[in-house]
Length: 269
Image 1 (cartoon, rainbow, N blue to C red):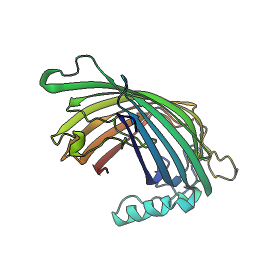
Image 2 (image 1 turned 30 degrees about the horizontal axis):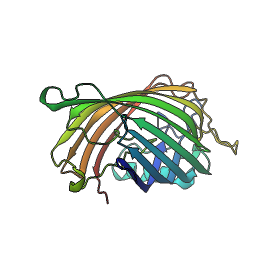
Image 3 (image 1 turned 90 degrees about the vertical axis):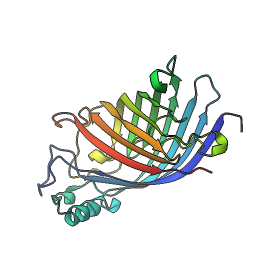
Image 4 (image 1 turned 30 degrees about the vertical axis):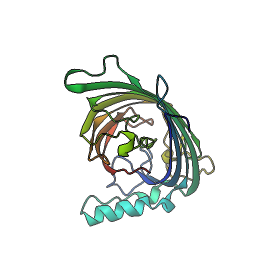
């Protein structure tokens, strides 16, 4: 291919689990979001052009799976909470009903070096705007945001991934490609916005009308994510992120947040 252009492909398997605020209540909770599980296989293709004046990254993904009891999300949560003697979830009988789903995702990211990138101690600053769209029977939305990351020996990638969009796997880690063995780390913050047209995990099915709970969605959701990413021994990466979201449905009462901790071992060919 053209110098500076690299590609990546692969597959992911994911099980996403959603519950109302209280899992102690065995009764239906019509004013909260429903229990739901979304289990899918995702096929991924990625392309990055690092030869441009402003490097560009593209991600396309096709997700095929099932929402509802067949996702096994309820069984998994019950087993985990029982095994570790946690609060037992009692409302999964009212979860979103079974439905086969398909989502098509596309995202694009641009990477900008802030002028005079090498500050005191080799400090480096980048801006990485992004825009994406998901069209499908489970999710239909558009999103945009911009990541500000600040750190040392920043990796030649396009930022950390998210629940919606996977990491960038186009960067070569081979010594021949000039990959640096030394420690690198950075802090980042990403404000963003989602425009939401459809989300079946809230009970809004395109094909059936027998879900026990159907939450009324907010069409615009704001979000902000921050965290720290550390790379070591070339192939290992640790990340910790926290995301805050404005209310996603009517009656939610306020914003909510979630955290993620990841330890990744990545090898490229």
